[in-house]
Amino acid sequence: MCSSEELDYPQKLLDYQRGFFISKTVFTACELGVFDLLHEAKEPISAAAVASQLSTSEDGMERLLDACVGLKLVKVDLKNNKGYYSNNEISTVYLVKSSPRTLYHMMMYYSKTVYMCWHFLPQAIREGKNQYERALGISAKDVFEAIYSSEEEMLTFMYNMDSIWKINGKDVIQAFDLSTYRTVYDLGGCSGALAKQLVSTYNESTVTIMDLPKVVQTAKKHFVTDKDQHIHFLEGDFFNDPIPEADLFVMARIIHDWTEEKCLQLLRKIYQSCRSGGGVLLVEVLLNEDRSGPVISQLFSLNMLVQTEGKERTPSEYTSLLADSGFRDIEVKVTGKIYDAILGRK
Image (cartoon, rainbow, N blue to C red; front, top):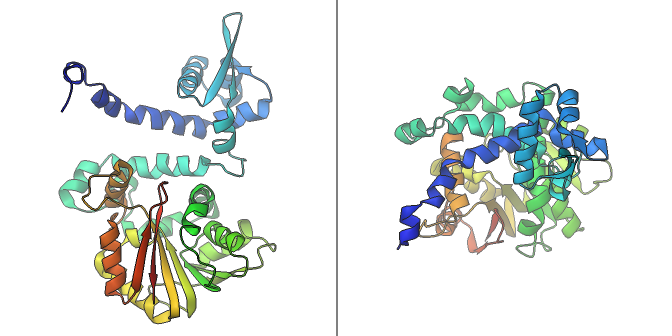
């Protein structure tokens, strides 16, 4: 039950109401290059200096910087009643574009794509379908074509996917002992970030990334180097092209994109290509069995509504999909982070 204080002053609701203020502030600071400039400056600088170099108003930039201070992403030193700003450790590691662990590209994807789609959440609820056409002027089936229309667009999307597995990949790869699986196919493996995690953990395994031709070509050019000797590529569409035989198939954030019918179609196809004793590893956001949470999973499921034809699922729903496709001895491991792991065996 709510306390009388909560009913008198609904702080939680007020925080929810203003939630998008925070995300859009961070997105804007990234887009304008605030964190990059503060990083390059090497020492604290004034709002006027930041505004001058980024071609913004001084007043607007000072307010943005102060908000970033309040969000604990920027530090401020006062000298003669004037603020001088610098990055803190979090922004240096995760928001500076050149950082090896940057989330800059993820922020830009959320700002320019996800945020736009969520504007039409009421329509998505009413209609039960994604909102790409309203938000971005393109149909869902043309999304990937739009993403891959230029190398710049493709790189933004791939860097976004790459950053996810740099901070979540180790947990899902180590959720199960995968050391007995020597030949691995990462279906829709994009930049190869998860494949790298797998190879670094199980150095006797070889991982082949199967993805669309443009993705493979870009990954080879920008993400996977000659040092990654245990990582290979195969150009193809896993729905329409043959899937080679392997010990283990990895699908990270793939199944949640699709309807039950398409999920079963793909999983049954994988089962046929899976060697006896092999398996399939799904990496997804999990809902509680009673759908009471976690709230991030519930929000992600709404996101799948506005962006795809899929949804987030409970452990039993993933277990059912795998069992109906022929897999057995299915295990679910909750990592305590955003993404969890489900392993089915043949």
